[in-house]
Image (tube, rainbow, N blue to C red; front, side, top):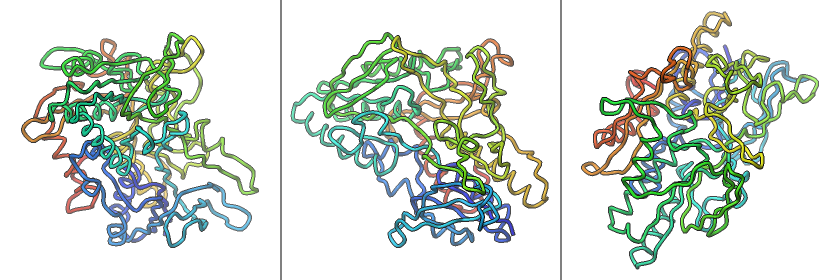
Length: 486
C-alpha cells in the first residue's frame, strides 16, 4: 500500500486529492494536511467583498467528503521536511503542527512514499509595512474571511458617501513585486459598480495602483488579443475599462508602506510619493511558508528543496540569464523536485524560474514589476497532472513521468468580473494560449492569436456566475465531477 501525502487543500491540492482517490480508490493511503477544514472557491471572494455573496456560499467543509472517499484528513500545517527520514524513521516524512482546537500545537511525523506540496503561497502582508487587513481602512480579498471584512469596511464607506462625505478608494498591488493583479482588477471594477449602482459616484474617487509597467500586464507580460474581430492588446483593454468608468491609475509603483490614511510608494523614476485614501485593498507579496528540510543526519538541506523565496524547486531551469534569453523551456512540466523525485509541487507552491513580465528596477535599484501568476486554471491542471503521474507510478512501479503541463504550452481561460447583476452585470471572457509567451513559435504575437481573445458583456457575467456553481459542484465530488475540466 502506497502512502501519498498532499499538503494543502486549495485548487491544486484538492484537485490532486480528488484524482488520486478516483484513480487509486481505497487500496492506498491518501492523507490530506491543511490548516483549514474548508475548501473555498477563491475567484468568488471578490463578490463576497462587495456583499453579493456570503462566505458560506463560496466554501464548504472538506471533512465529510474526505471521510466518504476514505481520505485521511489532518487539520495541521507542515513545518519541516525530512525527505530521507532520520535515524529512527527510515522513510521520508513531513513534520506537522496541528491547528485544530483539539490538538492545537501538537507535533506529528507523517511518513510518505509520495509527497505533493500544494501549500500555495504565504500571504506576505508583513513584507509591506502597515499592510495588515482588518486594521484601520485596509482590506483584503485573499481569503473568504478577509473578503467578509472587506465588505464590512466597504459598507462603512458607502454609508459615509450616502451622508455626503467624499471617499477615496485605492485598489491594486501592495508590494513592489506582487502578483495577482487580476483579482485586484476585478475587485476595483466591482467596487466601482456598487458605488454607481447606488448613485454615489460624485462622492467617490477610485484609483488603481499597480506595479505593472503598463496596465493589462497581469504578470504575464500583457497579451495581444482578438476583440470584436480586431487585434488589440490588454493594455488598451484595461485602460478602456478604466476610462469608461472614470477610474484613474498609478502604474510602475512599488508600495513600501501604508498607514491609516496614506500609501507610500516608489516609482521607477526613483521618486518617493504618497497617495491619500479612505479605503484600500492591496494584494500583498507572495512567498514560501518558511519550511525547512533536513537530511537523515539532521543537516539542513533546505536549499535542495526550496528556492530563496521559500517556494519549492521543481524541474525548471533556474539558471540566471538575461531577459532576452528566457524561453518556455525554462518552465517546469512535471513539478517534480530534482533532488527527490517522489516530491512534487503543483500550483503556487513551486518556484518559477523567473517572472513572465520583463523585470524592472527603479533608479534606486528597487525591483518593481509583476511576478508570475499561477492561480486558477493552471493550478488545477498542475494538480491533475501531478495526481495522474503518481497514480501511474503507484500502479506500474515505473517512475517514468508521462503526463506534463508546461505553462509555456498550456492555455488558460479567465472571466474578469466587472459588476454583479443578472441583467446589469458584466464581465470580460479572456483566454490566452500559452500562458508564457512563445516568441519562437508565435513571432508576431507571442501567443496563438486565434485562441487568445477577450470579449466583454453580460454573457460573460452569466458564465462566471455559472462557473461558480459548476466548480463548487466539481470540488464537492458530485456525480461525474471529473467530466468538468479544470
